[in-house]
Length: 266
Image (tube, rainbow, N blue to C red; front, side, top):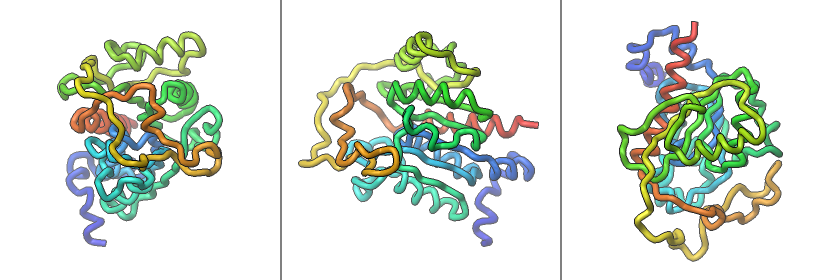
């Protein structure tokens, strides 16, 4: 108990007791537990967030080890959200962390009760699912933050924050805007983390190197009957190179936006 009381002493020194109480009471849902989302979750829990829901359908692949917090040679094949939850509870055993091995999609969106959260964070890759999440999240009372593409980047000083319609130089943001202009506009403005840097892949795209890929998506479950033995690596039309420091800074920046917003609330 004594150790737990001291977990957030340095944060409390900076922010004060009342803000720490607000942080602890804040409900956050994070979609995507990969290179961006895993580091965002780490920062949120280390900052005092105690009510966090993690959503991701994937299992850990050996190719995740270069950039994802919970990915190690010992965790390959494990469900990402389960491995991440275990890691986060080692930081704060008292945190209420819900791990959902699910895909966010039009079909599953009602399962997440988005209206019950204070903050919704988007760190998913799928363009189609990302568009739907943007539309759904901006219709709630929650504050919404979104990560744009973090791959093909090396320069940490180039990572920025801007309102969605003002993001420039990011191919993912451009693709999202094109889709949203054809369908429906977000109900309210929201901030994005992005970078204008777009490098080229210099290496040859190869498989993960195992005889059988160990990163199937979620096993059969509510809303996901088609995902048995589903292999995610080979499904992607294009796989881009990534490095840990840029994906982590994207994630840390998202977490920082949450804390800044909580601290400026009256």
